[in-house]
Amino acid sequence: MRRISLLFLVVVLFIITTKISIGLGDKDAFYPVLKNELWGYIDRSGKMVIANEFTKAETFAENLAGVKVGRTWGYINTHGKIVIKPQFTRISPFRGGLARVQIGNPLTGDYGYINKEGKYIVNPRFAKGRNFAEGLAAVKEGRLWGYLDRRGKMVIKPQFDEAFSFAANNLARVKVGAIKGLIGGKYGFINKEGQIVINPQFTGATDFAEGLAAVKQDKAWGYIDRQQNWVIQPQYAGAETFREGLARVQVGNLFQKKYVFIDKKGRVITKTKYDKALGFADGLAAVKQNGVWGYIDSSGKKAIDFKFSRAESFQNGVARVKTEAGAAYINKKGVIIWQND
Image (cartoon, rainbow, N blue to C red; front, side):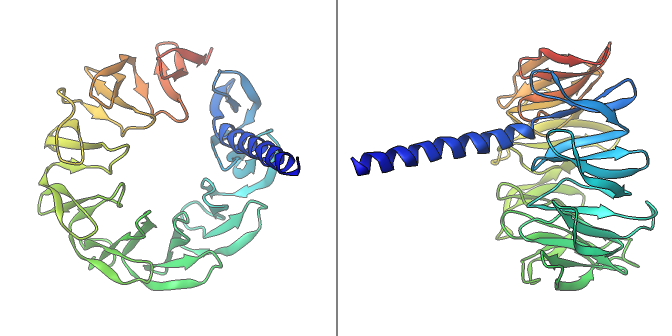
C-alpha cells in the first residue's frame, strides 16, 4: 500500500512538472503585433494576450521579452508586467538566464550583461559583445575580442580581430590577421581553452551547426567537420548553416543570385532555384519566386501557396507574413490567425 502511494505521488509530481514545463514553453509562443502604432502580443490562436502599449516589442525567450517604452528598452513577463524597467539603449533575448544590454549612445555606448532580476553580472564596459553560449560570451575590449565566463572573468584574453559565440560542439569562430582589425584576415576555430583547433585559413566562415560549418576557400563555399575534413567540397557562391538537416546555398554568381537547399551529403533537394530563401524552421522554409513568397517542406515540395509580399521563418508553429491587407500571422496550414486591420 505504501509503495502504491509513493508511486502515485511520483506520477502526480511528473504530471505537474510536465505541465509547468509545457506551460513555460508555450509562453514563448507569444508573438509581437503592431496595432494602432503600438505593439502588443498574441498567442498561437491569434488572441491578443498582452495589450498593445509598447513602442517596439521583441519575441519572448525564457519567459521574458524585450519591449521599448519611449526611447529605452526593458523587459516584460508573460503577463505583460514590466519586470526590468526600461533603461537600456539596446537589448538581446535571454539565453541561459543572462542577456546582453547596452547603455548610452547607440554608436558608442558600452555593453554589459544582466540576469533576470535586472542586476548586472557584468557591468557595461565593453565596446561590443555577443550573447552567452556554452557558458562563455565574446566581448570586444579596445580593438580585440576575447571571452568572458558567467562570473564576468576574462577566461580567454582579447587577441582576436573578431570573435563569435561558441557552438554546441564547443568550438567558436574567430578571425585573425586583419589589417587594423577590419580589412581582410582569415577565419579559424578555437576551443573553450582558447586554443586554435582549426587554423585560420578561410576567407569566410559560419558557426558550426549540426556538426558542420560552412567555410569559404578562395572564391567558393563548402562544408567541413570538426576534424577539418571536407564533407561537401567548395562549390557554392554562398552558404549558410544547417538547420533541421538542410542548408540554404547560393548558386550562380553575385549578379544572378539563386538559392537551393542541400542535405548533409551535398544533394540538392529542391528542383527550383529560388530568388530568395530562409533557413528551415518547424519543418518549413520560406522561399521567394516570381516576386512572391511561399513555403516548402523538407522534401522540397510546396507546403503553403506563394502569395505573400514578405515572409518570415516559423516559430512554434506560427509565422509572420505580409499580405495585400498588411501584416499577418499564419499557421503551418497557411491559414491566417491574425491580420492587422
